[in-house]
Image (cartoon, rainbow, N blue to C red; front, side):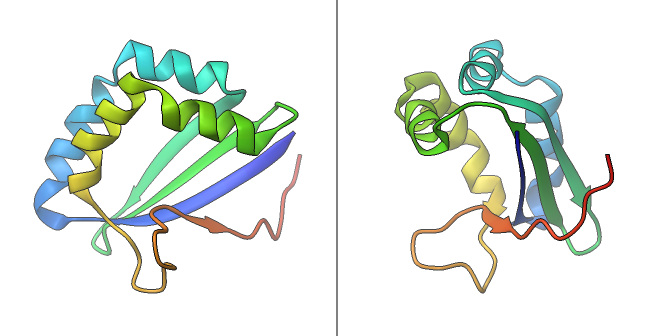
Length: 109
């Protein structure tokens, strides 16, 4: 199992919309997340900085292939198209990078 942590900014004027979207996440998108070997997926919000932190556990054997499978899914692409306007990459994100992966420095099981 691989633990993944990522961070991105949330636009202040989109906080309520983002919360509403995720309170009613689309079943097809949730199913695709599971089909791509992701479990225990959680998104946290830190205000007033408006930072989103996501955590999930990857249980598959080929992370890149599962991520590509998810990215190719039309329903997931549609979901991202409504969520992405709420988000803003960190100033330190690389070209083309959206959610930025974080280093796993400590874990207590």
